[in-house]
Image 1 (cartoon, rainbow, N blue to C red):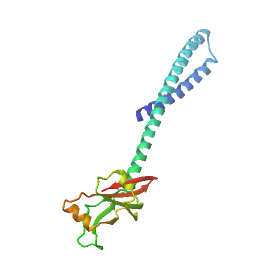
Image 2: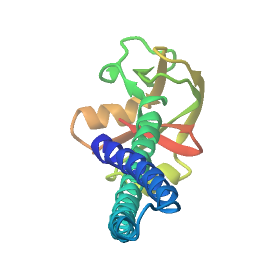
Image 3: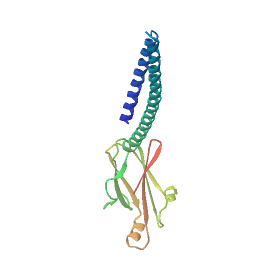
Length: 202
């Protein structure tokens, strides 16, 4: 791209020089010494003017192509920069490890703990944790049902860690642990950035 732009600039300079040459020839033409010299100079002037016109056309085309390619290149760079900014400078919420069953629960239900962290370079202003359990395989609609437990974890700053606890009643957990009844669980973290919903599913 730089070579094309440089060629366009050289063409413009050549056009300026050609124009100056044409003016000089025209000034010299205004005071001929003899008729023969006048005819010869007119012939030479026509050749120079013709070459200048061709050079002008070629230079204009080269310059136009160089400008078009420059603008396209700048457009691509701008698009890539915006994509990089969106995916790099944004919150990235993710787990730091597996879900753990706590030995001691604060209630009669089985208590589970998961630690999440913001791996991004910007803060997540509001993170919402959603937990759902069912005896049937979960679907996308399962997180929109009335059985979803939702909890607001608040803002999560870069490199910050937060713990989220969810509970499963002891009877349901015992049946699932003994293989008597299937148990499907889903954990869903939702946060907003750039007017878009970001989701992390465990």
